[in-house]
Length: 291
Image (tube, rainbow, N blue to C red):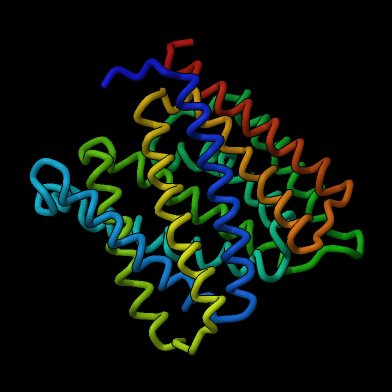
């Protein structure tokens, strides 16, 4: 398919961010009442079923979807994402949505910083400067040495690091494997890993929370579907900057639904991180265009 409908792609990305923000709010609530491992495990069961259903409908079915030239790297991707989700949901419980997403917004900067050693890409001085400025923004959010730093603030930073590694491995396997294959391995490996751990934390859930759990599963599948559609109708470089809107949507849910606050340092630091991230995305786009 020719990727020309940029406006539609942007709208789909905005919708994706809104749906994922709702998913984060549901995760925050459920993980506050039950084990993170349990919540993520059930979420992955639905995700794996969704992935398998999509794979069956494509040419070649499950056999074609599972065929890969990088089985170990694909498995590592699946494990990294499952772990990242568990770490990030833990951050929601410890810090809330606002601060967690403010710190997590640094992940594109980590991708840029690690793209050299992991993928062998060249990172110029402009992007290194943006990376340094972005991490200065993270320090503004964390405020170390000012008596307000909480070690828990490192949890979403760890999640950002894991997600950056996941993204870099995804780019590496994409050199030989189609997106459908990576998507299949992400869902199935993650579900298997989370079941092996999460089943030991099983506990009864109330009927209302089962309803919220069902909503969590649906928003997860819907968010991934919208994301796939966004990248299907528009160039990734055109829609990726709008992924930062998840920070805005998640913060709005945190403030309205959970009574969180956005302190001035968090707002200022987030603005610095997002601006630096947008600059690195712009420079990466220029490099792909030969600029």
